Length: 76
Image 1 (tube, rainbow, N blue to C red):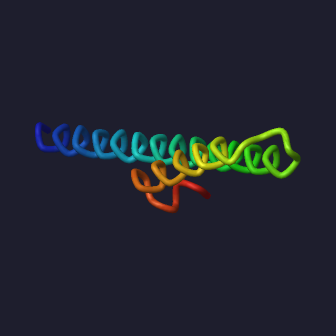
Image 2 (cartoon, rainbow, N blue to C red; image 1 turned 180 degrees about the vertical axis):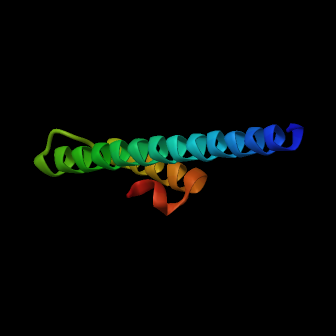
């Protein structure tokens, strides 16, 4: 009986761990999409004359930092 409970506990912990990884992956993707959207808005504003090159570079740096931390898959 104790072996069964140990296996059940181990499986439950594995499931929680996998769930947590999926949530973190989803949050990284969501953040990446938001950063890319901000980069696009900064570029558009620059092209329209109401934004600056500095704003575009700042947004691009934020995207690059996010990719460095989470990989390219975080932009999907």
